[in-house]
Amino acid sequence: MSLIKRDFETGTVEITTDKLCKNVTQAKNTLTQRMRFPGCVGEVTVDASLLKDGDYAGLCALQGCYGLVAVTKKNGKLFAVMKNRPADNASLQGMEKDTQAGILQEEVEIHTDHVKFRVEAEFENMKDEARFYYDAGEGWKQIGISQKLYFKMDHFTGCRFGLFIYATKEIGGSAGFSEFIYR
Image (cartoon, rainbow, N blue to C red; front, side, top):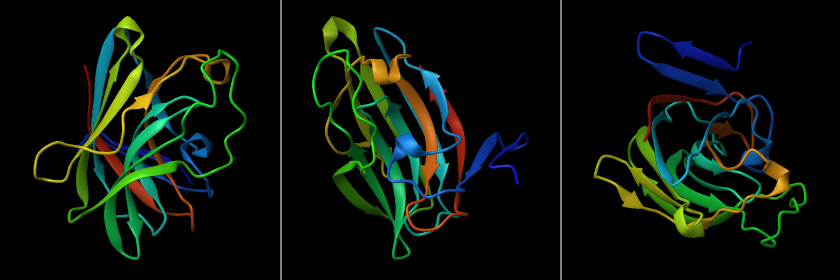
């Protein structure tokens, strides 16, 4: 069974879960794109209609001390969430392997299967942070906190945008990703 399917007619990539994860760093088949100096923005639309309870699907600033904005399903309801893993220090030394769930910074119930996510990254003057947004049909709203980004050896390629889905309760859920914009 292929875990990533691309529909050329609609421009959608569908990713299906096949293992249980604690956090985004354990997710298989995460699609990434390197972030660029001095700053950049990534946006994507997620179709959450096939999520299972406990699934998270969205857009992240992927590195050892990540931040993410996602849609999750709990008891049949959908929520936009922002989660993160703060750095344990500012050195180049890598962080310990991540075995915990990310820290939930904010959760907002949404009433649509299609939600847009945006991550804005700013690197100029050593600011090195990402901000997270969602649009569930009422315009862009900031969610959660600004995530400090650190270049560390545990993710030596630097920070990357990541399209992801992971399961925390049962496998087999999927999400469609479309309209990825990078500027």
